[in-house]
Length: 302
Image 1 (tube, rainbow, N blue to C red):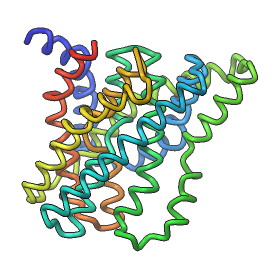
Image 2 (cartoon, rainbow, N blue to C red; image 1 turned 90 degrees about the horizontal axis):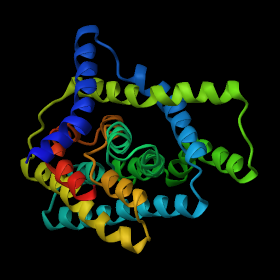
Image 3 (cartoon, one colour; image 1 turned 180 degrees about the vertical axis):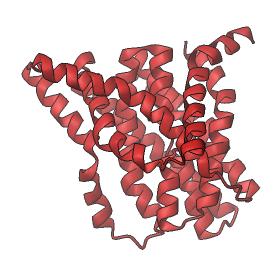
Image 4 (tube, rainbow, N blue to C red; image 1 turned 30 degrees about the horizontal axis):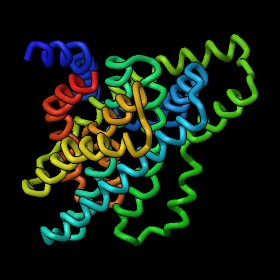
């Protein structure tokens, strides 16, 4: 028990403290979370991805393994959630909300710092690949799910090209394969922005929880939390062998899969009016419950 407590203090408590500061700051100054989310999405997150890749220099094979690993987990979770939702005879809007919060996890705001604190810089590089994959799926497949089929799928797919982090990966690949090195002034600039990304993500996580509303729907909420926090890492444990993940890549991939529901789902749910109160409650409860599942998982992975 003492080992789990130490793991929590060293790996999770700093995250909750910084997020708590963001929450209190938002309540005090009435800050709109979008003020933080846009710079993070367009500047800080792409620089973090780029900086992590060029300094760890992962092989193309390792990159593809991790990205297809994340894609496979998301797809399997989607199928399981859809089947469970149909079995429970959930309304279409609730089913869409449950799928959103079960499939797409907080691989960025929470997953990246936990991996960094627990397993180091190399794990952070693998975790960023998982994060980029899930974020891309959230902005495309997630939009289609939220719109319940009313969205033009072509437009959703084209939205893929609006995710800046994808261009960071492409540019990092080119630089690594060509053996190039950034000029010192560029390397320092990118490094400074990348180092600021994770603290800003944690502040944003706190800001996003300003508008928590209880939505009811206790049974679907329980299903979401169970799938997100328990079923997903179990699937990841099995798939890690299928994709040949080992060592740090296995640790990072499994840990990322166990993260709570993504904050971004609240934005999508609000935009498409798909049970936004339920989605917000799912994100909040899964985040609060996540230490109970993440700590034993961390102990196992270490």
